[in-house]
Structure formats: structure tokens, C-alpha cells
Image: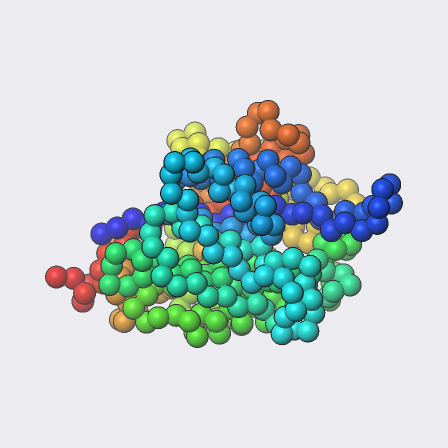
Amino acid sequence: MTELRLLFLNAFLLRPLRVGVGPLRWEPGAAPAAADRATELGRTVVGAYDVVALAEAFAVEDRRRVLEGWPADAPRPAVAVGPEGGWGRAGGRTATSSGLATLVDGPAVTRVERHRYTAAGHRLADADPWAAKGVLLVEVDVGLPGRVEVYSTHLCAGGGLFPVAGDRVAGTDAVRRAQAEELVAFVDATHQPANLALVVGDVNVPAGGRTDRDLAATLAPAGLEDLWLGLGSGPGPTSGLERVGGELGRLDPADPRFAPDDDPAPEAPTPEGPASPVDPAERIDRVFLQRPRPEHGLAVRHAVLRRRPFPRRADAPDRHRLPFLSDHLGLHLELTLAPAPDREG
């Protein structure tokens, strides 16, 4: 048997789009203290995980800062990044990368593949089309007859470029559905039968509603199931730390690395001004695990899935604006893996 420890985190390392100069400069999308949080994130996760899958790690310099958390005399993790900026098949040029980056610390990376989504939002209303949104596959050798395929993604949020609510941007649900269909097609095209597929990401679909049922139906043909439904407790909200704050980020007294499992969804304060693209305190960050198949070379014997808030240090810059390393909770996953029953012996 072997253990695999994985973290997914929407790191909220948003760099501003700079428009204009001097006092007339407009910087939409900037996140507080991105450089400091990137460095602190690396120091926090070093040695704790075999795989760290990040979203919203757009800038090369921020990915480098995360790596600075590793001791100078220790081997650096392997790093794979998702689709980069430039012209895509959708016909539009992006200003930045997909924001996807996966760090593998210890296990061997045996394959990396990428797909940039052709489905995109509205370029005059959404921030997402200006990023090369897509999916990143990193295949990890865990020393068993099959390998673990970690697919990471970040689906369209809708809005964010201007103060427009995402749900009011017509067609956002359809864009996410189309991206999910592209994700499944990519999994079908790249999945190796003996391997175990795992999809992690910020899907921007709140759990429990109609669009969530649509997402589940889209992923079902690939055998992908929402792991929280079998392992989690309560509503499990993952987003909104910059809006809901301390209530969502409370720590479990039994293990202060994590949020309490049985926390109800906190009641969000009434927002001032336009609504956010995603309502506060929704479970939009997910882990989807492939159901066991006869051809799999490995099996999951035990799994743990917890939410991790990552509070910042007391003297961190701009801590009053964002007291956590991200506006999302991370998803902490532990898998105990063994050869599939027909491969043992």
C-alpha cells in the first residue's frame, strides 16, 4: 500500500490588468498581497503534500515564489503548468495563462498533457476569456500497477472584468457546461485504463442546485463522482473567505489545520454594491474521483477529504484585507492506495 497526499487550492494570486497611467491607471482584478501570500503558501505546504494543484497562479514570478518555500538544500518539486496565454482555437487572444500549476514533491511525474477550452465567456463582460482557461493532466507514479492521473481545472466564473454579477451575464451556465463537456472529452482521450483518474478544481458551480445536477450528469460517463458526497460532512463551503471572513475560516479544535467538518454554511453579510460572480460560502471547489473499474491497476482502500483555511501570519501585509492565504479554503485529500484485488499477489 502507499499513501498519496494532495492539496487543491484556488490560490487567488490575481495580478491586475493595468490600464492607463498615473492617477488615471485602472487595475481591475488585483488581489491583496499576492507576492507575500505566494511565498507564505510555499512555506506552509512544503513537506506536507505529494501533489499540490493550484488555480489562479497566473504569473511566473508567483509560481517561483511558491517554490521559494522549499529549503535551498532540498530537491524542488516538479512543476507542470496549464495552457499558456496567446491565440487559442476559440479565436481570441488571452492576456494571461490558465492559472493552473501542479507541484509534485517526491513521486515521479510520468506524463503531462494540457487542453485549452474553446468555450469561453463574454470578452466584454467577463475576465475569464482573457485567461487561457483549460485543464492540466499530471500523471503520478505511486509505485503500483496503475498510476494516478490528476486533472486540474478552473471553470468559467462569469463577470469580474467590470462590476457585473456573474449570474447576470447571459450564457455563463452554458459556458461552464460546455467546458465540462470538453473536460470529459479530454479525460476520455488521455485516460489510461490501468490508471485512476482524479479531477480537482474550482468549478464555479454551487453544490446542490440545478447546475450542479447538470455538472454531475456531464461527468458521470467518465465515472467521476463528487468525493465530498461520500466523505464530507455538512454543506462544506469553500469560497468567500474575503467576504464571509472568520466564521467560514474557523479552525477545528481537534486538528487546527482544518475547518470543522460539521460547520453549517455561515450566513453571509449583505454585500454593498454589485453582487459577486459567485455567492459567498458556496461549495464550488471539488474533488471528483473515478469509480472503480475492472481494468484499474490500483484501488482506493481509504480516503480522507477535509477543508483547510490557511490563516496568514499575524504580521502579514494587508492581513486586514485578507487574513487567509486565499479567499478559498483548500481541499486536503489523503488516499491510501493498493494494487487492485486481481493484481495482488
